[in-house]
Image (cartoon, rainbow, N blue to C red; front, side, top):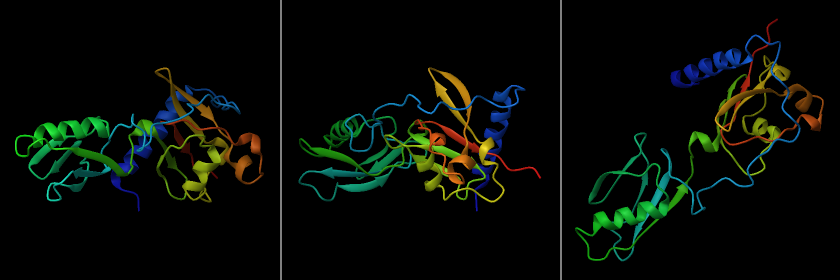
Length: 212
């Protein structure tokens, strides 16, 4: 069952889609080839930025009692042995390790800390969100080269009430929000590969309900 918060988000995004349409019959169809970044920072990247929900392994060399595994709280904070309410969200694992070393140096001589991300949730800008008539509406971690078909497989396909060819992708490009039409029915039911467009991190796929 969807949470109330997710239902509210779904309703908001459906209203957003209608607003972006601006009275037009339908938004433009997404080009078959969309410009996408060649890579998105993942948990193993030195540029990865920690976000709420990520699970971190904090290893203090030579001191197992100070080593721990923590989940970043919704407020972006973590608590480790001897260090309470430390901001983690928005930092790279390396930056957080240096901050922990500075904090622990008040209690331990020359601490050496390593921080790694063991479970990756990612920020919204690194996810693809699916709302509406998907079997399992959810946020999906973006992967390099992800396509529309990859997204539909991840959410378990469409419901029987989905208006697949009226689905839209809301995308922000250079600070401007744009809406594109995608052809889910053609892709899934007809096997039309030309409808299998590339996705971008931060995309929101909105699948409306068929009106009988």
